[in-house]
Amino acid sequence: MASARTTLSFDDVELGDELPESHPLVSLEVVQSFCDTARMNFGRFTDHEQARAEGLPGAIVPGIMSQGLLAAMIHAWAPGCRIRVLDTVFRAPVAVDSSPVCRGAITDTDPASRCVEIDLTIQNETGETRVVGTATVELD
Image 1 (cartoon, rainbow, N blue to C red):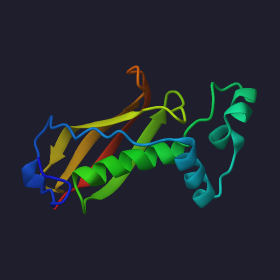
Image 2: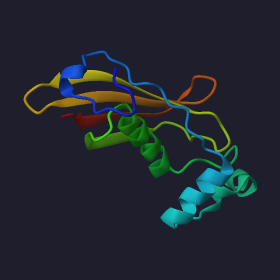
Image 3: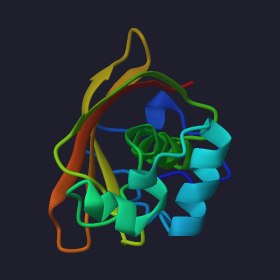
Image 4: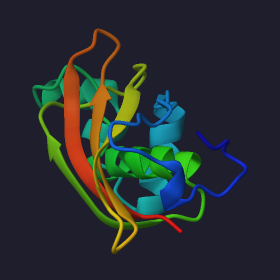
């Protein structure tokens, strides 16, 4: 596998390859910064007590931030790649101040388009899958 500093080529990957897992920081401060930038300051994302008042176990990571975490993992694996499609299903919230793990594995390759299909997950620290998805990624 290529390091984060080199460009990954389609010829470098094989069906079944796993992307290096990532362990993104989803602290209240990081999520607050994301929400400020995205102008989406809803209490369920930035305030544990308000989230609990809405029936959640605490503040949760916004869905679009979860998608961004998966995209960041893909770009760390293959700098300069083009993510053509990133589709996600949110099975359960990703908790703020938790320790999520993002994983991916190549499930299909298309030499004609130089694209790979990647199955994606975000799991919590107990291994429960919170987000599942797929990506179509074009490599050089």
